[in-house]
Length: 247
Image 1: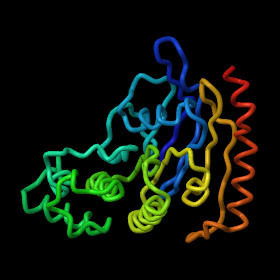
Image 2 (image 1 turned 90 degrees about the horizontal axis):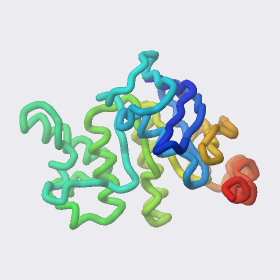
Image 3 (image 1 turned 90 degrees about the vertical axis):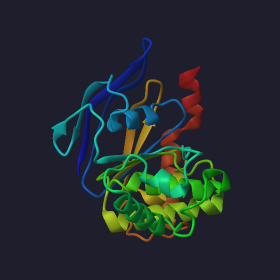
Image 4 (image 1 turned 30 degrees about the horizontal axis):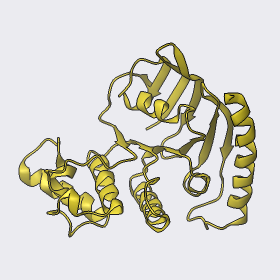
């Protein structure tokens, strides 16, 4: 499923957060939104998801302009946001239609996909941070979304767990070929995961640069190309210039 943003902007209480953002994502591509804090990355995800419809411009999903929440779009937040009174399995199947057996079968399949086949009866308080985020991933995938939005989903995790879940995300992408848009502050994460990186700058946030990554997967985290891309991105972000623009 394709995605296109056309001159999207968003204003809160008279202050513009995002201005004139346009980009597209073809079916099965992974797009990264990268930039410093406050440049509107999460604002754009909320607009794409339909959680926020009060934006300027247009968003087209598979060519159809919409401002509504779409069943075809899944959202994974920075925090797992699990219901503490429900088991892992019930969290994954919450809101699904169908019989109890149908929902449980589907939920268990996706828990197996994220490596939690033996954790269905646990409660959120019994999970590590990485396990909880795996549950959140399974919950987002259980509706078979054709577009998957991720808002810094691994930022609160330790480095090793983060790398494990990045690889899990790529395994899932390889299987389902969803179109993915991921917001991140992590340049290494962006170069490892994405087909294209969109760099946002300023307040209000605007597109400063787009960088395509042609290296095939699986990618070596320490490859020369990814190191060169990281240098290019750091030069584009120019954090000293960012501070001056705010001041």
